Amino acid sequence: MPTFKRFEDMEAWQKACELVRQVYAASGRGPFARDFVLRDQIRRAAVSVTSNIAEGFGRGGSQEFIQFLAVANGSLNELRSQLYLALDQGYVTPEEFAQLTESAVEVSRLVRGLMAYLRRSDIKGVRHRREASRTGDVRPET
Image (cartoon, rainbow, N blue to C red; front, side, top):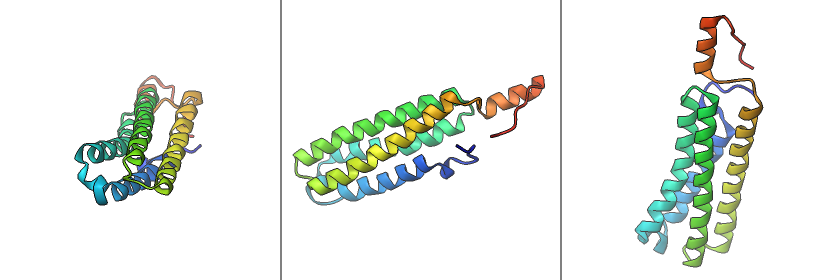
């Protein structure tokens, strides 16, 4: 797995952005658009995924990044739970439910894969690289 220079380069973030677009489209139609509580909550859960990936990336340490990725993954599970409510209320069709759930599962797989990679990696993050440069223990980016 390459070192990312920008969070926008991560497939997990890119797929999460597509999921946000899909959630906004589905929740912006018909009765779903008028159920302000569920509509707003499912949108917040979706946006939380992209936001936590980006914020964790910017923290500068792998452990912090892993924590934010875990929050993003929790938001994906929250979103999936809310999709069941939307299906039960008839706000989404079974086909929309299946597609949105599949997208959420795919993003979750990518997020968990990134977490596993970071746990196995010797990369500790930008903040640690700066600290190591002061002590002379600098490793190149991989």
